[in-house]
Length: 265
Length: 276
Ligand SMILES: Nc1ncnc2c1ncn2[C@@H]1O[C@H](COP(=O)(O)OP(=O)(O)OP(=O)(O)O)[C@@H](O)[C@H]1O
Ligand SMILES: [Mg+2]
Image (tube, rainbow over all chains, first blue to last red; front, side, top):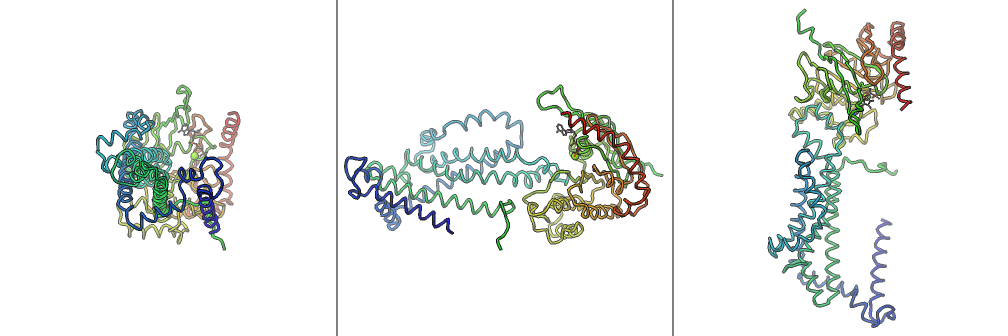
């Protein structure tokens, strides 16, 4: 509780600082040569707030936000599912993993954002080019974590399950999957953010809808307040999605020991 | 006597296990060499030997988890091939913790039944019974990390015994327990064993425990190239109470005799490990 108050206090402080530095004429300009230059480059918090308020009050933002969230959700789901499936498969099949190893490494070290223009050509300017970008970003994070997770399964656990009569399928279900799950969740937090990056960067490079598109438009007219408003809305959404992953994680991972689990009397 | 009666439950013949060194293949380490060991039906055999001599290795071979470099394993007269899977007739209680951390106590106990497709309600009913027998009644909904080391050992015991395997392989199952609990568990094990006389291969480094429990004690030499160097029949009357039997003169005589055979090997193992 105390922590929350301090966190809010810090937020307030940042906004006040933002306001004081940018409000034209409030303090004498110390870096820029004109009083309204700071506001031109950094926006003004109260105006940013009103942009956001207008967006939601008029409902103008919803179709754009909906598109961006849809792209994010699709990119995340497809990428995570593919990463989980292929990660499990390669981790359990040494031959396949040995053959594909250099390709995986290559794709992973490639700066995958450069694929965005190609996806735009392949999938058009609709949502699928953005989804494709999100998938390529999400896939590798999840994939490597699952791969690692399966490799790290204690050999003792496997031996014990085999002695208890587990078949290969049962081993997968009751040993490999649950054991890889903690790694998967660690990666999903990153993956949500990356799915967002995929969606927004895709929109940025060519689209007619989405929050990325709004930001691009505003930038074209030097409307810095709208740019900041877009950034803030995206940040808030990313935080919400991340906490959703956190909720699911806590639900599924009740078995994990938490540090110092004694109750205060 | 019928011939099937003479077929041992478990027959390890001329087993050699060489482990390749990680960096240099020519420097392979021979953990076990030419070891032969039989467990008759219904017999309780203990294996004692200095630490690191290859007891767990031998048990892994018997379980079909580890393929020996040479030698054969027969289970009730049938060849056990590691390529064809593990020893289906054996239950194995591991030395290290092998419970599934994401399953509660009861779900861990019934894992084996679940793998065999026993309906859940029936499995849980059996599981609760076993939790009671190992003194964990009411702890079924706890996760392993919420239990003490001794509780986890008892959980693992229930997990293994619930399947009622014909052969029981146990790798220092009670070494993590305090003396009192340990004697309780030893008596419990003897009582369970007396019910249906499974064949038991029991590993321990505690000679007293070995004598108190078994029909036969096998002493292993120090590594490398471990093999059995002595076998001692334990003709103490059953049923036994492990804490009382330790005081009897017959027990003490046996202890002295086996210890004399072991002492040299223990010292040898100690010197070797110091030298490394
Ligand atoms: N996978 C392996 N690779 C290489 N060496 C191994 C391997 N497993 C065991 N060893 C070696 O074989 C020897 C016997 O090991 P083992 O685990 O069977 O000993 P142990 O008798 O069970 O000892 P303890 O009483 O301490 O449990 C040890 O020296 C060990 O270092
Ligand atoms: Mg051992």
